Length: 211
Image (cartoon, rainbow, N blue to C red; front, side):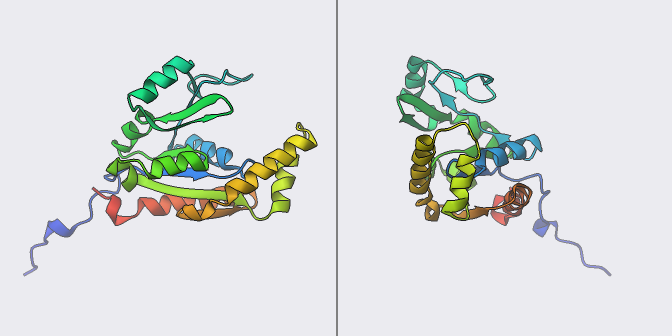
């Protein structure tokens, strides 16, 4: 006679899991924004849209590229703790609304964030246990300074002085790579995306994420 199966040990359905907050940083020219947006276009994650007080540039759409707020609106939201992270850069405010992240994580959906190293540090130090448990952070950077300069110069729209400034800023940002759980040395775009997506797939299989 076959023993009765104890159903208590069976693994729950794979869709029954907590959402992942996939936080991605890297210097200008690393390709991080392209990778994040591709992940969202493939339906693998919600792309977190940031808020800013700077005016829209040509072709930018409110709610797609940024949520464009007035300085008063931004500061009012910051005062009541609505931002997961925020900072002032060159006289403009930038930040990520908590609601832009938590509403998806609560439904078991993954969220991908394209964010600088200062914002990433704020997210890591936040007091929300659910955010900390969901967090997976990745730093993307070119393999060396020569490749980085090649990418920055490849835009062919900036002066040599602007490229030099961006290179200096990028090298300073790259010093923070050891603060991240994972690091992706960028190469060919298709290979970068394959490895980028594979990391998210692997994180989804963590037993700790199953409800």
